[in-house]
Amino acid sequence: DTLVCFGKNVQLSASGGSSYTWSPANFLTSTNIPNPVAVAPRNSISYIVTVTDTLGCIRAKSDTIFVRVIPPLRVNAGPADTSVVLGQSLLMQATGALQYTWSPATWLNNATIANPVSNPQDSIRYYLLGRDANGCEGRDSINVTVYRIEPSMYVPTAFTPNGDGQNDVIRPILIGMKSLTYFRVYNRFGEMVFSTSTIEHGWDGIFKGKPQDPATFIWIAQGVTFTNETINQKGYVVLIR
Image 1 (cartoon, rainbow, N blue to C red):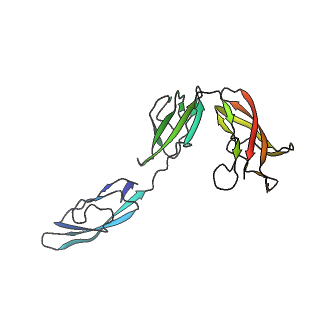
Image 2 (cartoon, rainbow, N blue to C red):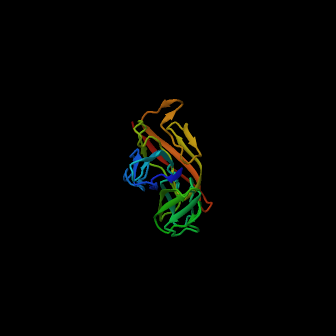
Image 3 (tube, helix red, strand yellow):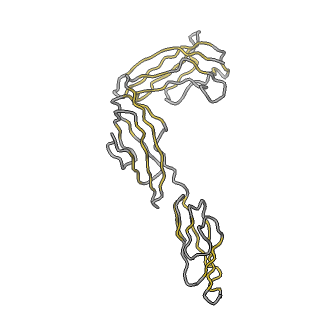
């Protein structure tokens, strides 16, 4: 049996005869030579080679080589897009492999571990190469945008919760923030229609099980910056249907 990483070629080999026939022909560069190459087989497969000697006698009717293809290595470099403010460190969090290499190594404290710390001075895209115990490789990347502003919580001024997958939820976008203490939304009667302390959680325009009519809502938010400073912000958002 032969192990091969997904996407890699396999060199096959037979000997002891003057002519050779390989089957099936899937992924093979040739079916009538002693050493064909299986080009990036997409699935595990058994090859049978029939060997004939110079007298035309069949010497081996069913010599079988099983090629086991290791599934693709799913390496994850983290969120596809990440933002920080100038001076804020970023902890990278790679998963899915045994060994890691980040490139470029610019602003990283260690480019060969899963979770190096970056102190980016400008926007940059990091590329990640991961390897498993078999030497198989997987790749991913992460884009880091550096803002030259003070830490803040940005909330859009309008959203359209109509189920089209765009602007359906209103939530704060944290820039230079370490955590969200709370994000609350109030209607014009002073009722709190939504509250969360989870960064990725937002309001979908529903209150007490009912979609709210188009209106202007007030939001308030509190969070902690990467320098452990507590900041409070407020604003308004328009629900559009």
